[in-house]
Image (cartoon, rainbow, N blue to C red):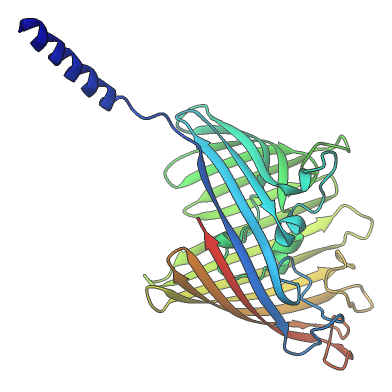
Length: 344
């Protein structure tokens, strides 16, 4: 009997010890899919269809966004992210690939990191840009279509960055990277340098690339419990004899009307000088042009599904930036988008 009791106690103790052992961290799978319908209101919707010269949500009729599949692992000290994209939005985001591998154009992010201490983290690989208010994945944006500043700033970098937590309210990131958006390897032998200073939820960014320099401010404020105001401003100049470039500012007011419906506006002014990057498409005698884009978006949430109806009006400074229904040069373009986004 004593042997039986002893064995029983040993079995119970072993079972309790096994239950108390912490579970090993596992790989997490997350992502999203999105699709949309787009129609011009003041221009054709056939083979002559045009769209604002900003990235994504620019195809006519019923169209596909992308499938985004992200595998991640977060250990106590180390971790990784493997972020893959499939579809038109993903292809546009990884536009410089494939450079070497046949599958480079499906890699949105691919990096590993080491938490050296509670205040220092090192990351190496391919990661989305730290500049700007908006993201490649539609789940990170309130508006479905994207701004001019986001579309013509960087998308991604490949390199090594260090994140420092300076205090509860201040952070610093510094990094060395390949030329911007050359994500598979370095074909030029040149390197870009970036830095970000975070303070009370606001971020001041700088990127010094071999061909351009960009300064960027991104932030936002909770004005009330239901009203948020986001802000983005950017200035980019190319290292060229005429110093072309662009600058812009955008405001993102958003108000929660119900638990499931939010209404938001993006009001963006975008200016190219000395010919800029050829974005707007029509310029004055000095090679300057500007566009004011107003985007009104509703966001209706049903569990993991988000429905976004969107009205957008782009108004440029020069005729010929857009065309009207008679294919005559126009300064403005109005359009409608209805998007469906499912995240998991």
